[in-house]
Image (tube, rainbow, N blue to C red):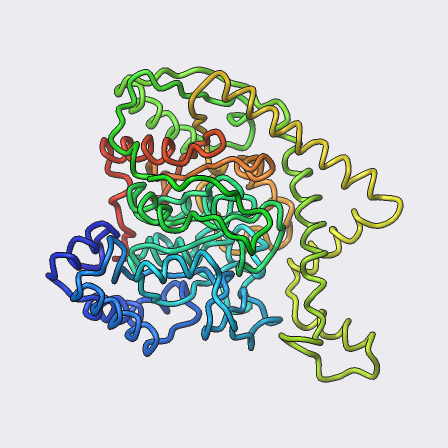
Amino acid sequence: MLKNYTLKQCSELLQSKHISASELAQEYLHSIEQNNAAINGYITLNHEQTMAEAKAADELIAQGSSNLLTGVPIAYKDIFCQQGWRSACSSKMLDSFVAPYTATVVQNLRNAGMVTLGRTNMDEFAMGSTTESSFYGVTLNPWQNQHVPGGSSGGSAAVVAARLAPVALGSDTGGSIRQPASHCGITGLKPTYGVVSRYGMVAYASSFDQAGPMAQTAEDCALLLNVMASFDERDSTSIERQSEDYTRDLNQPLNGLRVGIPKEFFGEGLTDDVHAAINNVIDLLKKQGAVITEVSLPHTELSIPAYYVLASAEASTNLSRYDGVRYGHRAEDFNNLDEMYSNTRAEGFGNEVKRRIMIGSYVLSHGYYDAYYLKAQKLRRLVANDFQNALNQCDVILSPVAPTSAPVLGSHDQDPVQMYLSDIYTVSLNLAGLPGMSIPAGFDSKGLPIGVQLIGNYFAESRLLGIAHQIQQHSDWHTKTPFAL
């Protein structure tokens, strides 16, 4: 079926003119119309706009002015502003907000001629690991719909897994690309902090947030990152560096590659199924000549409290702008300005967002700033140092993405701390600003996908993508589709 094609395969069909961008977009829109209700992956569609973009792509191809991405459909997480589209961040607070401008990373992909299919569901303001906190309802895992797809980029992961888009854009604050990619059986990359502009991406925790590609294959992620990565003067955290070709290491052999296995990542809580998936990838790497070595990340257990103190503190500051004055939701019932503020925020934010705002306000308050916030910043440096020490002993670190496969819907409703603990293997990368990616590595005893995580040093995206590509050249986990398809 055409909808099972990767980005590269779609590109080849378009460039050879075996299909037009309009025909390709129409086929995806038809599939979305038939299947999206089963997973609730898309929350905003605009057929007229999609077809207008596809027509423009066809004109570029006809003129010989196209590139590899021209005419290829893509889905965007609802966290990215996109002019003329509702950009709600899956929150009631922004339900009526239509973006007056476009995020830099989206504009880069639009300039390349990619066609917007729609906007995907997510945890409200990217706060969550299950895509259950969305104002627009829960997204279901395409493999088994009684399970979550992960989060916060669960909608993006679900539509790629369900083949309702060849590729999608996600964002990663503490694992929000890698974890849903693992739970949905696709490939997802979090680049080094600052490689992809954050301008136009609704802020959750500004020193952690990073946009990244989600696709079926590592090769597709590399092709997307070639266009996504750029310096942006409008983003003060954007890194100015020479552009590079992220596909350059795809065919590099793995003989002699030093792979570090962090001993702290294989303790209590890791299921046998996930451990077995890691061992399968280790065996595959050994057959290709890689050398496996044990490394240590001694502050792993402290990464969760450090992350949630810092991320919540930044969230409480970033979300203070939603006050009902300038844009977004405003309460109708109030008697004075203070009531307007409080009623608007009480109505506009969901429970998880309120929880993190309260935590963040607490740790930043007088008397607790030194005890919590400053101490967490010191821990952040220790975590980053741990990674540098480990990466001095190896070329890449291999680890689990999550302790388990996708949880059952509602399993964290009464104990949100358990949801936070599920990020134990991912948040440390965001604390350090390192690149990491999830690739499919098998299935558990219930048939749910399991991913493994590759972690590299700063700006090592091309090497990570090359390693992932070689693993995928010698395995077929990434080619599997949900049983329902």
